[in-house]
Image 1 (tube, one colour):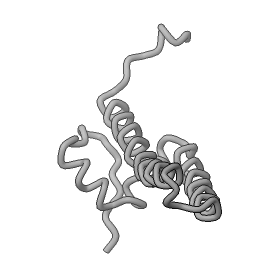
Image 2 (image 1 turned 180 degrees about the vertical axis):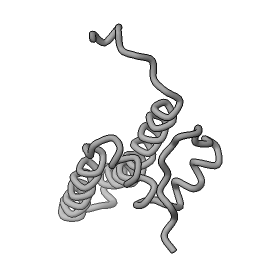
Image 3 (image 1 turned 30 degrees about the vertical axis):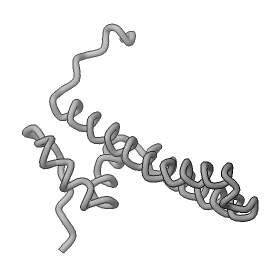
Image 4 (image 1 turned 135 degrees about the vertical axis):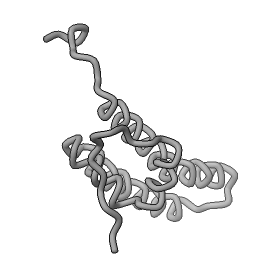
Length: 109
């Protein structure tokens, strides 16, 4: 089946797509906004090259970690989001109720 001939998404798939996209945006902003602030400080002479080097190394480490999460199989990624960032997920799910049939991770006890 070609891309234009794909079956329409189910409500569960649509919900999962929103979850994944919103989580991706949240995590990238979590990484890049502080990095942008550091770049501005470096440009203004408020941070040294060594401080920027350390900041870039830490950012790179976190980007690798995030990519490792985001490249998981879809079903695993949906569960990982619920487990790894439970507080974020609980706030998000208040605005995006899961449709019937959605597989949810039980909160840790």
